[in-house]
Image (cartoon, rainbow, N blue to C red):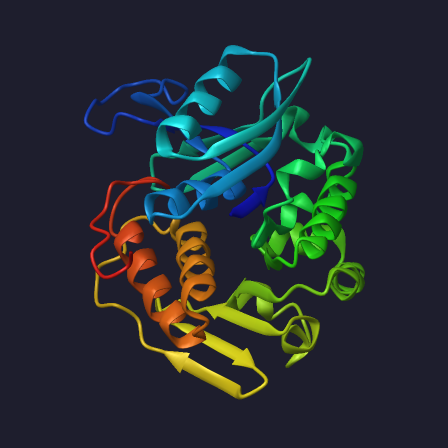
Length: 292
């Protein structure tokens, strides 16, 4: 069983109608709502690849939570959600007329997940626990994530952390986050080039047994006790890289758990991420041949 802990988010995409002249600036052409959140996206991709996966998170007592939890169930994810009075997390993507996209996140009650609300039975069979960095950077959800790590370690499971956002790391403090990583001591850490650049050279390799670098080209680099090696990208045109990182991590973790090979994990992760980035949205339907 693979477990992820974090936010279950309602993603709202607002796009102006570029084909209509004279339209007021504050009038959207279309509004699209989808399920999202790094931890939830990760879980969905694990399920689509055939893995057994559980999602842990807190949601509001609103209709959005019901729809999002039902969507996880339809995808084959086992949702272990705690409900609290308030709003479920949302992320609004507002596309401006010149192509820029402004993101407005509201984590709602997701950050209120407490350590005592994490049921030990949810991690009793955990072979792997995956945490986006956002699950560690706020309180009290950070204490819930720490409890999940302890329970996963007791179950002999591995732990991975995706740094997820360079801005969030800068706002939190890179030095403070490095201390946190030393405490958690993840087996695997995922980072983009921008995120890795916040740390001193080789630091991520010292903070985790395996450091996986998601390269801007679409390939990846891997640092472990054998050294550093890079893997070439798939030759697919990138249209929307928004959800590719979560898909990459899901394919990597599931493949490594099954094969024990970091090389095979990198090949499969690159393939899936490229196919996801070739479509719009964080969870597009893509060909999984060669990845599952």
